[in-house]
Image 1: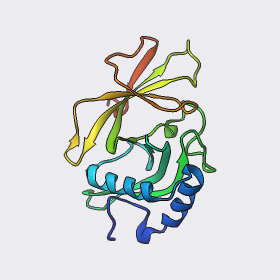
Image 2 (image 1 turned 120 degrees about the horizontal axis):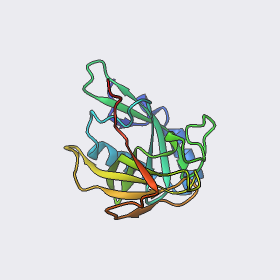
Image 3 (image 1 turned 90 degrees about the vertical axis):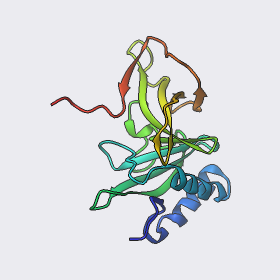
Image 4 (image 1 turned 120 degrees about the vertical axis):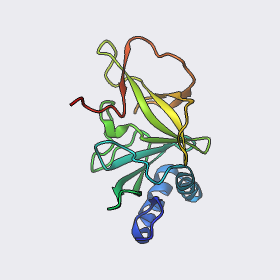
Length: 189
């Protein structure tokens, strides 16, 4: 198999579909779509896993509000994680396979990576509203820059909600009516 870490599948089997969905959902030619693929292959480490439990992932482009949807696979030697992008959605859209539902507590509706000013940012921590607030109101994701060398230690907060346009914000602390959860936490043995 001769794949780059991010691709449209072996022999680019999903490229035509992704190009059609990009034109339909984003209303642009696919130049930016191909640029996003280049950015991901240039910036994301080859062994980077996009999620802990599921092979599915979402990557949101802040410039266009496009969401790249795909699955990841590990090689037998575990040195490389291949990520196949198989469709394109618009922020807040849903898919027939319900990977991205329009309610806030669906983990798959939250991006694993965000491309912001042509840099890649990885979601590492999240703050969600307590029961006092509407369950589908705003959430905050702590995003760390991601490069080939790994995570960088200068996080910023992304204000998020499936029914709102995402907003990048620089905040030290989030209001106390939000509780936090480490995106990568593991159960205690």
